Amino acid sequence: MDYEILIRFFLAALWGGIVGAEREYRSKSAGFRTMIMISIGSCFFTMMSQYIGSPGNPDRIASNIVTGIGFLGAGVIFRGEFRVNGITTAATIWVVAAVGMGIGAGYYFAAAAASVFVFIVLAILPYCEKWIDQWNQSKTYTIHCRFTGNAKEKFENLYRQYDLKFMTLRESKNEDDLSISWEVQGHVKSHQAFIAVVMNDITVKGFEY
Image 1 (cartoon, one colour):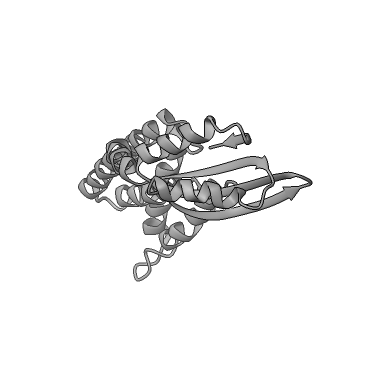
Image 2: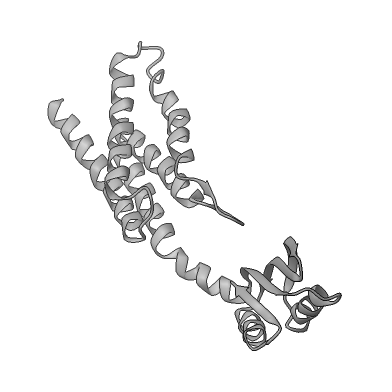
């Protein structure tokens, strides 16, 4: 029985570490050590649930892991200026906890298969995302220029000219200066063409993207 416990802890560290190594490589907030700790902790809680729980209720501790891990996942989600970041890492924490639970319950093959699929999703699918992003890239543009009656319309006509979909996020006026932010979607070449035009526009005082 003691060897079985060691094997479970080792497998939990192994599969959690594989996923954590990918997160560490991408400099995410929950990296190598964090994922190992989550996997081992979930494994241990599951085993303790089976050992301590009554014969008719062996999941009384393990059932709370899913709820508890949500608080940890929420800690890596943060809101940027225009988007929410950390959702993928939070989802990874959730799945790694499930892997640890699987190992703690003795489902080694299922846990290993889940870890492999998670690693594939994290390591390989980003390249597919980049290919998709070429066709529909989303950017946030902020343009600072001198206030005129048609300043906003001028840039929005440029979006239309280059087949870019846009939505106004924020507008502000300070004396004679106008600042407008848009969320813009479209093909990467359309974005590049728009950026080139704005960068060469002498009426633009500032351009952030």
